[in-house]
Image (cartoon, rainbow, N blue to C red; front, top):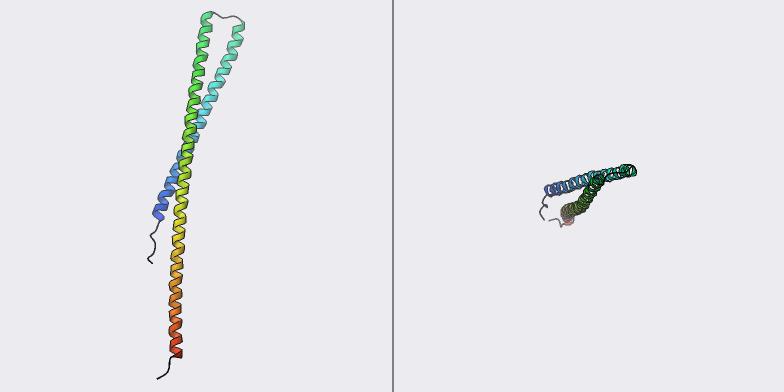
Length: 150
């Protein structure tokens, strides 16, 4: 049996792939957190604008101002919907990144198990060779001791 090939280069490659997948996942999560903050800011601004408008409307407003306010609120709602869509896309990206990370982890674990199994097999092979050598030496000594003398 020849010594098994060293898999450390492949292990390093798999570790780098796993690390890259983890980095991409962290980046996607940061982007989602920022997008969530933006959505919360838009929604908060819409609530504040609605409150201000309600207070102002009590005093009476012109039809032009009313139309302008409605248009403004529609634009805020549209921006909120767009931001919600961005969040959904980022959730999908996060799910994809998590899947890639798990896939890379499994590949790395598989390679490490293979490397460990090969190392164990090699050690067993060396132990068997050593045992065989010791057995041969013991047999030779036994033969020399019990061999008929001429």
